[in-house]
Image (cartoon, rainbow, N blue to C red; front, side, top):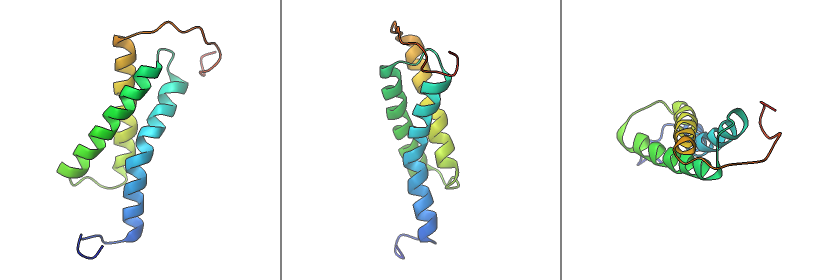
Length: 99
């Protein structure tokens, strides 16, 4: 870790946690708080979130606590957009906060 410029093991732990849990949190928010989310939209949102996280990690010097937010936001936005572009009729009731 000394060769890679890591200042703290705790910081590295938070960075890795933020990279992986942002997309998972985005899936939760997408599924619970939206009515139009589909399975394909959730997968697309998670994949887009992973790509965004890798790009941000490689090309920016963003603070490590922002990775969880960017992962969550990109997953929700991309997943919802995908679900609007490719809708699927669902007859499942009672899975969101709206019912």
